[in-house]
Structure formats: structure tokens, C-alpha cells
Amino acid sequence: MNNDITVEMVMKEKIYSTKEIADYLGIADSTVRKWCLLLEEHGYNFRRNEFQKREYVEHDAIALHKFKDLTKDGAMSLEDAAIAVSSNFSRVPNNAITTPDTKENNRYDERYMRVLEDKVDALTEMMDRQLQFNEALMKKMDEQQKLFSERMELSDQRLVEAMKMINNTQKELAAAKSPEPPKGFLQRLFGK
Image (cartoon, rainbow, N blue to C red):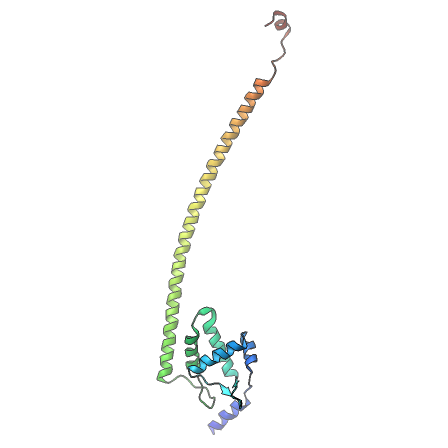
């Protein structure tokens, strides 16, 4: 009787097309098919119609969404994501959802966890290197700013000195070119 209930529930589930799943995930139809092939290689079962075309149900949409999340931005390879999703979302032939209890699934879970731990370690190491690089870059920028400020100050001092010299030279030239002051009456009379 329990098996009859499961079959009845499966029969009432809404069935989605490849296009609908692709639209839901925001990817191309061909990508959905490629991901499904990878999942099937690792033991995931999709329902098939009388023409042997895949029929997607809500459970498949969730599994494919998880697959997309795992592979987003290269966080996990397609192969590793397929193993993880297949082991955590596998189904028995009558389309009832099972939990990963077998040794093989546990092995995939352990591999998945190792992959995640390796990725976290690699990201942590990369972040540490990036922080060191940023600190060195900030130190170098501070040194450059200090050197630039010192050079600008020296340049300003030289410019002020040059302006003073130009002003003094202009005053001396102006004084040398100016006519003699008019001679007074006695100076004109005696010629001195």
C-alpha cells in the first residue's frame, strides 16, 4: 500500500520541460542536458516518458539548482558537483527520494567534504597572500607619497627663490635704465 501511495504522488507531480528548467535556472537548454548526463553518470535517475525523454519534477529542479550553486564561479568542478548532487539527491527507480546510506554514497560525501575543505584552505591561503600584498602595496604607496611631497616642497622652495631673484633683477634693470633725476638750479648752473 505504501508503494501505491508513492506511485500516486509521483503521478500527480507537475512535470517540467528542459526549457522550463533552463529558464528557472537561467541557463541554456544544452547546459541542462549536459548537467543531466553528468548526474546520470554518477547514479542520478531522471524520469523518462514513453519516448525516453527526461521529465523533470520539483525534486530534479532542486537538484539541478544545487548543482548550479556548487559550480558557480568555479567553486567546484562539474565532476565533483555531479558526485555531490547524485549522492545527496539520488532516487530509487520508483522515483521515491532516498537518503545516502550506502558506503559508496558515504565515500562521495567524504570526497565532497575533502574537496570543500581543500577549497576553503586554498581560499584562506589566497586571502592571506592578498592581505600581505595589500599591506606591502600600502606601505609602498605611503613611501611614494612621502617622496612626492618632499620633492614638491623642494620644488616650491626653488621656485620661490627663482621668483625673488627675477624680481631683484627686474628692479636693478629698472633702476639702471631710469633717467637721472632732474638737476636743480645750482647743478645746472655749475654743471655738476
